[in-house]
Image (tube, rainbow, N blue to C red; front, side, top):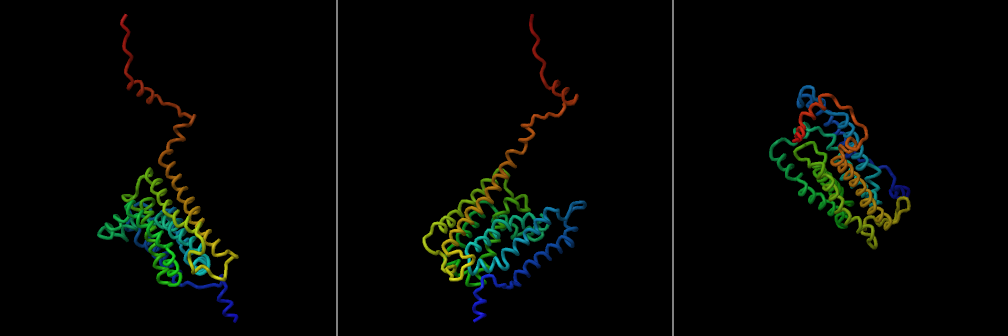
Length: 295
């Protein structure tokens, strides 16, 4: 009897050694490449990694661990679809750009190479191609039969999460990827990111306004924090729409001002630096003399 009651506790600890191994493997691989391979892969005097890259890597690993381990994983898989939605946002919006920002160009070139794999990544990372692939993946992961099957099958669940992360990494490649040849201009980034926020509004609106419980798996008698299945479903839609849009639109605004307001402060400031004699002389020399008046 006690074991049955304990099994219904949503907050019971469940170990996920596979997640710990993945995180430890990534950390160990990163440290090994930075310390052992990096000094031979960069030019003399060039830093192997920057502080920003190290901080981004730490943030990426923290997000990966939080999203994939207890309690987020267990609550999201067994009880609350809203927690499952937070997982998806971590794996598609927050973790991938940090992981790319943490990766030096030399490291990714060693991993990808310059052969067929590089050419495949180059083609897949084209904005139109990866935009379609990523948004199709977002739609597929919200189809009720797929969701209900994935939370009951660990291999399918992890496979979908892996595919979501890989497609998200490709989606973010034109924005913050280490390969500069694959990045789009700062003027195109706001448009690109805005378009990525459009398609998710479809499943978000559907979840918010659907009548009845969409995903039968989450219609459980044991509730977390007393949230009903319908409220949980609506909360998931709000998280997807508002949370994802706020994050992406914040980046849209950032890149817009980065591109079009770079010199605004200097151009609209009342402060003027003193002119030098050489600058005044150069301006006079470049100005044609006025025509002489004929008396």
